[in-house]
Image (cartoon, rainbow, N blue to C red):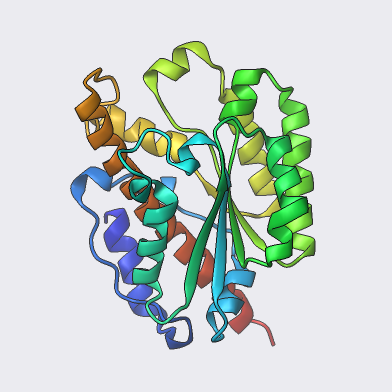
Length: 258
């Protein structure tokens, strides 16, 4: 069963009117990936709780260049903006708001300062934290990178804010010059240790490239922009499904309590 069909099936079976789940539309072929790449065993209790109320469910996307819209034709096509639309389709009764705190060149340390000085004060239900590439380019110690992730996640959880980690993009050119592997390893290990979802953007994009779904080597600017726009939309669609799965897990956890 494809990712889209599989997730649509559990949404249809969930019977969760309080959360406003909607039937999901099938993903276009070029967005599809193996099921394992978006599976999660990590619940999102803060977001699930907010969705049960009439209060706005605020989500902050924290990141660097790609989260700020670098590479797409216009900012509206960047994945945070597309994520807002996909999540609203998934939760049609919710009052959703997606804000972006991102700029090119932000390191994990910069992002931790943004969490401390700005984002936590906003009291979002969820922070989507994209990081790793800038630290790899700048040669930040992977262990130090991991410590910053730990501190940020602990801060968010103390304030009852959920977090989804997002790893680096895949590019055959970048792979040749920048070793992102240790940073991706820390993201994976940290996500498992803190039981938070990890959106495996790198592996998803690598799968698309290996299957010929997207051309990531073209030097044609028009092709690059068209691919970037479509990739960001697909990433947002898949991320919305992973977030929906995290909400469903939180709902199941709560319903199983005596």
